[in-house]
Length: 245
Length: 271
Ligand SMILES: Nc1ncnc2c1ncn2[C@@H]1O[C@H](COP(=O)(O)OP(=O)(O)OP(=O)(O)O)[C@@H](O)[C@H]1O
Ligand SMILES: [Mg+2]
Image 1 (cartoon, helix red, strand yellow):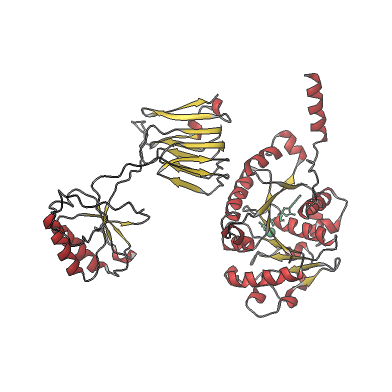
Image 2 (cartoon, rainbow over the protein chains, first blue to last red; image 1 turned 120 degrees about the vertical axis):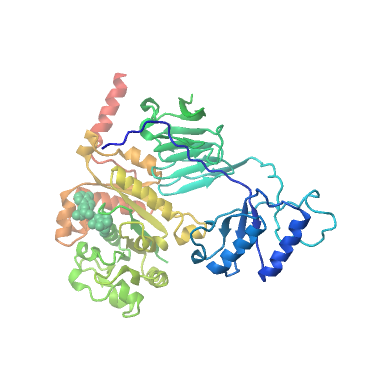
């Protein structure tokens, strides 16, 4: 039997970044939990609804100890969305997934409404952030061809390649992708959610293009545009491609 | 100090071993001291193409493991006294090549020879990355077909990231050697055009070696094609490539393109 797809809309796969609060307990854990309770008392509900990542690097916890710690946090209404720095064997089924590759974000103070003024004790959780700082626009410039097998990932902004992107190579940008050469591999713009991002290239021979999670394969591209200088953008759920003059 | 050259490709069977032997013999005929090093442990071939398979006693792995001294493992060519071979092991595992061992051997060879030419195994694994690791110059061997070009592109990426030169922030000198170029098939459009390959890989062209039965004939008598029949088309192309490698600025001619050039001139006049 052949399967029939009744709905021909493509599935959108997006990346999204959240600013997580990172808790890095230190030993002994009982003392650390006591300090956490103290902080929670003064800024009630601080952890409610916040993504919390538990950083257990260097603590050397085994699976049982880690499970206990997560349970202790659960009792305090702190739900852990992921664990960083744990031994692979310490993470079991039913536990939050292991995370890696997190980038540090600037520390932000606990605001006064959340902490009482007479709270000089240093908080155990250092980077406590109430609102993401306004992002400055950033760009990454690659001055050489992107070779087959290479992957350029830059979620903070635009990527400009002065050269070609080879078949089997990929460029993934949070913003737009600019290629001053041939695009023979894959280009993904707006990769962490940005429908306004665009892809520009001097010569379109792409294997795949994607904007904000909507993608087109090589065979979906208008053959008349192949080999041409082209820009691509998103109109609703459709990728529009047009020759650049 | 000699120059270390890696002959590499990614894809297998494109002509690395043929080119290592031919370039080595061509450079040695200029009276420069040359050693060709077989890095294809387990699938050694260079000894056959050099006609030295019956003279192999010790090999690269023996030297690395300290079972033999370098001079004991080097085989001097019977025809050219400045040409040497350091064979690979056919029986050992390629895990016997250690980064430190390879470094030591290459550094020692550099002191004795003007050219150290390393014949890389196919692929992008350990054997290939070890062969390129200490190179000053890379000869990227490519056939004019899509899969070979793509693999070469991948190798160029590794040359720019996985080599000592790259790690020191220096630029690896890279040259494209287009081999097994068939003029009639190119005319029919069955193969990628030279310009297209150059545009995709964007590295300078060292030479174009025509597809020729002379290559097979040479390897059957166990001689690099530049020794077996110096007047044959592939040999002449390899001689020119060797001169470019040594720094001469020679224009590259595309085999069988004379007619193409002529017809281009005619169209221009008609227009
Ligand atoms: N210019 C040429 N014309 C005709 N045949 C050629 C030419 N160059 C190489 N060959 C043939 O192609 C085959 C593969 O060549 P060679 O062994 O040099 O490739 P290689 O890249 O070293 O292969 P491997 O990846 O297996 O080490 C051999 O049979 C060789 O004779
Ligand atoms: Mg070979």
